[in-house]
Length: 364
Image: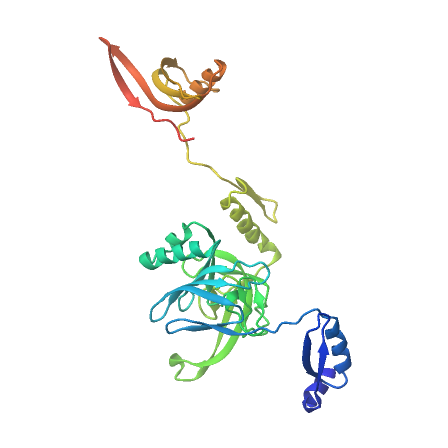
């Protein structure tokens, strides 16, 4: 009722000046019934800062932002560009050094760096090669963020809210099926692989269609947290993540830990009691050497070099020549730093050796 009263009585708003706790003078307008309450609240505030929207200018593009941004480098064409930005006042401890690439539709992204100099070097490498790999391999690279059709946080303007790495969508609408913040199973358009994505908002509007004789048809676009989107009628319809689907999210999270090197195996439990177990298996090394006579040149800790000829029979404890050599060396009170060459001898004849092969040392 109070909000309705205010909407009906806009002309009754009055202005007042009030001093904050730090001495800052603030002028505001409010309804007469609320003016004292608001003034008392502002007096308790230490400092108020209003968002100021500026402009980052490019050749033919310009982007508005409320942050203090210095553009160090820029290169662009008719419909895309890449720039190096230094955000002087990043909020919430965010990284203020980025290489931002704008591409129409859903290919926009930005790269975070530790210093401006490293960001500039990455930018120069990309401009000369147009290969993202040069950016990812550059010294000081921190991470890459895919924006898709979402606006990155550093190009927020006015009082726009931030949601993670992005600007909160201005066109978010209530939708009975796709709810903001809810997780959905989304199928890749080409490979039909299911992934879990969070809904960032929905836009529904009417648009004339050439396929319907000029009649207006409803279009619905659902925006996801990774900058991608799904349009009604395109591909498999996303499905709300249910309890029985939680294993998908769990598998994705655990697989990411595996790729990050935080674990070497993971297990996912299903509702019926079954279990999926995944284990990281490194590339197979040679598991066993053949019995025979070998010649090896080894470097001991301390730098001394020895060349030895010996008979070898594989065992459970020492299935390879490398393990045999290291084990014997430790028993003799020395330690091998490196095995330079390893040769199997098949036959001796008149003082000459015949070789069956040269075994390079296994990678450490």
